[in-house]
Image (tube, rainbow, N blue to C red; front, side):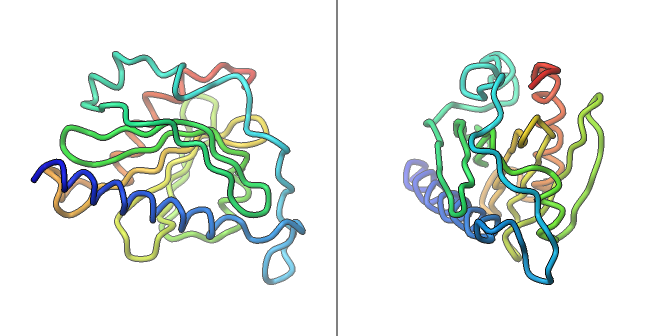
Length: 183
């Protein structure tokens, strides 16, 4: 049964990621509803940090993560994510990507429960982008985009009472210092 549960979680995670694509695309004209001007997107994801190669295996092992697959996605309006996915031994999933979505653009979307904070000299934030779904997105500022963690801690995991945003922020606080200052 554990294999089936992991497969179901992977499907739910993929569905949540597709909601993120739809939620952030907003068209390619640089404007959002209400006439607010959004920052235009960079033509590519930030350079200088590849989550699949630059996050030490020892860090992910210490957090109980097992690598699953590369997670490169192109969304509407030129939005891109480049990174990898992991499954935690406690049965929650995480996708860690670089994206051309800036924190400014995330703020402009008005997602639920935004929490802003600093990691060293980098601005960072967590948001809930999926309605009533418990998944959380944590972003750390990079040049022309961000490092993004999408964490899904479903109710049937071993940690159902752990807040997804607290888990995502904790992981982001360990990974963001690895990003080169010029990235």
